[in-house]
Length: 310
Image 1 (cartoon, rainbow, N blue to C red):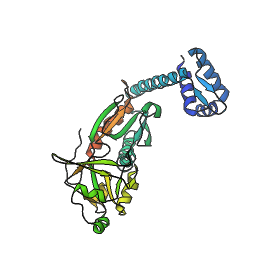
Image 2: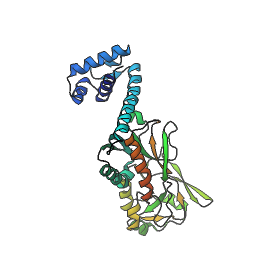
Image 3: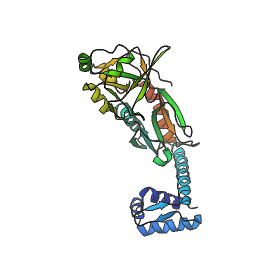
Image 4: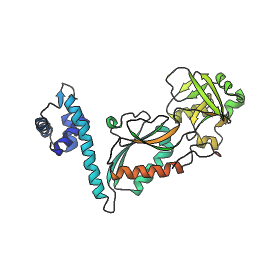
């Protein structure tokens, strides 16, 4: 099959209609339509169903689209490899980062990377729920999880510690927390959990405690969650990096510091698809992040031991 026709087909699928695909490719709608007909002739199968509102992939079209993405990625990797023999790396990388960690700490690193490699363009998505990298068209995803997907390549970057925090004003009104059981009497603020009530697990050396809690407020957007804790709405379960500055500057106070709570994810991973030949631009970004993220030293409580792995 003609590689140019495969590229046109991928553009049509991603654009959603022939007119938009033509606009993106700088050609007319009729030219795009002819390219699609020619590719269907070469493939010997209908690739798209044309409805009144949109184009829908047939089973053959879905298979060709998935393989076509990989083919085009391999061609781009080969071109990037050739380009890298010169003095400037070139390429395009689509990156997904979790919102809280991305906003505060990863965004400056990505901007630093673009400054070091002006020939590499980045498309950055801030999202917490990227599951299928191929469907989401993501090359590199950073994800906080305890169970990385088995059908992807997961590079372990560092441990993620969690802590319980409250505002000084909340503690002044309600008193200190002495034991894990005291959490049951506090409004509890945390990331979303599947169940309405859940068991929070806390560890202190060999000792393990579980407390059944009903969250008062849940959000996966950590700036909002931290604001609620700072404003005295209750006790919050936060990753250490999210409350780093607030704890250091006294706006948040860690509670039950002898106990280590288990959060929604225990480690940070760089996740990619199982590609034997990633582009030089992708490999360069991964190597950069693997080196620079652990050096941030914001993943364990101030004064504690950083739990990052090289």
